[in-house]
Image 1 (cartoon, rainbow, N blue to C red):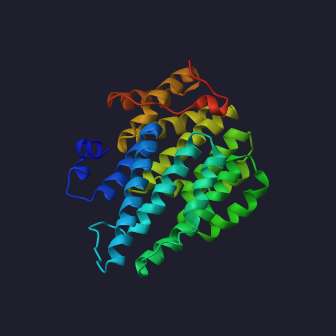
Image 2: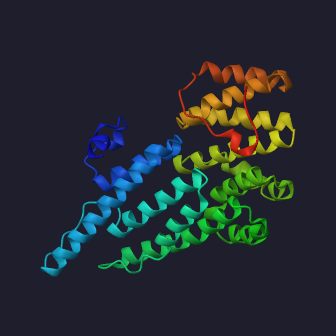
Amino acid sequence: MEEVLNQRGAIYLLSDSHALDKACELFRISYTHNDWDEANKVADYLHSLAESLYHTQLRNAADGKYETLDTKHPLVFYYAYSYLAKSIYYQNIGQYEEARDYIMKYSEMGWFMGLDQSGHEEVERFRFLAKANLYMIDLLSGKKELLPEYVQFLHSNDEELLPGLVSITEAANLNNWDIDELLNEFADDIEIFEGYEDRANRVYYLKLVNQLAIYYLKKKQYIVALNYILVSLQFSIGVEADANFRTLVALFETYRDLATPSQQEQYQTILLRGLHNEKGIKLDNYGLSVS
């Protein structure tokens, strides 16, 4: 895995960053590209490295030696992040109970020895993330009765609104829920999300648009769905999210006869910017297929 980390083409992986930080960035890249096999391997490597460094620190502390790691975050962050990464992996392959198990692991990291103030802050941060992500898993598992409670949670925690809407829309697609009223409630927020410039939120927005396209296709609102497909194609280029591009092209082609002349013109413009190789999203999970 060290060899993989050092051979990635991205500039930020060719720096002198600590292997823990490189692993976190590599997981984010795998997540963006929906490369779940790679993401799983990186998560396992990250946990193995964080655990090894933790035990080394414990031994050194017992001998009166204290070493500071040259990392962006305290060690407890990487230990917890490895569990978060595993939960994301299992969530995205539809194994929700396994995802829940890993969420519970990072929900309580207070046992971690040697925590300073920043370490305790990370423990609290992951405790909050676990609360939010348990809602997501329950919704994806079909527990629609939790939806009002989760929406209230999102109203109280704006930073969770965008990833929360991704999960709600995906849950609706998986479980055939009608969420028109909820989407109307957050329509202004969804419009604002399009203007986000940081990469993490743009990736979340791309995933939301993908789910909205699927949602409206299932409802046979084809013009609306095709608009979202076009937005997703545009964003796939902008954030180099190759994992969406080819499947979305095939999906647009399937419904191309239903597109307006303006939509077809926009589609051709996007294609001229270049087709990318990617692995695609599993539309069959939602009862859709492409020809």
